[in-house]
Image (cartoon, rainbow, N blue to C red):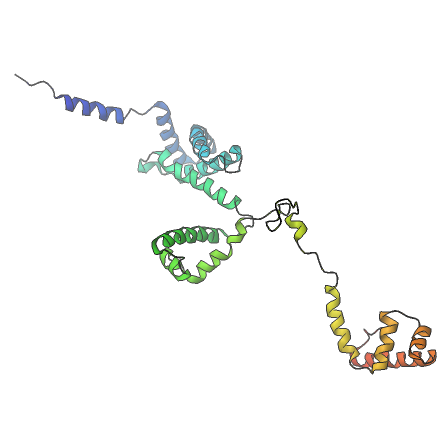
Length: 274
């Protein structure tokens, strides 16, 4: 007498059947369109493929909400990744398209956030290196119980010390501080902003170089000539007032002034005042 079928075998067979459902009509259409697009590169077929996979894009995009960017913008970036996946997919490998497309879509969204999160745009290579450096730093600090050296970080991630330093130097470019933000150095009741605490442009800076040149020029004159030019061109006094202060005649002042200017002109050219 034949033995009844084993219960466990029937259960296993049924489980395998449930684990491998029959392809739906939509999946079959997707596979057909992927094969056809790989052969023809017809834009109309690609548009249909995008429509069939729009739910996948929206599902992945929702994983990145609450990061400061509108969901609609994230989805648009996800569709860019979907199109890239469609272009690169090889139907002959018999892989599931969703398995192939998911990391491409998610990767494009991550790159979008990485680029948008930087206050100052820096090369992507340096951004990626900084992420690796930060990750290695945390790991090594946990392992060593101290802050790792630049050489140790570079050895862990395969970068030269100069490359590690270059990545660390761009770290401040990730974030900016608003000038309207409260200054950390002020008391709690003080409403002074950071912008109000920043130094203003020193209007005398432009005079520093001119003063140095003037001192060098005036060193070639006698003390009386320097005094006359200072009174005439710095204090802008008339010759009569200069003569009164020096106790000499106005004609003498005029003659000394003219002689001093001629001397300076011979030494330094025609940039000397008349």
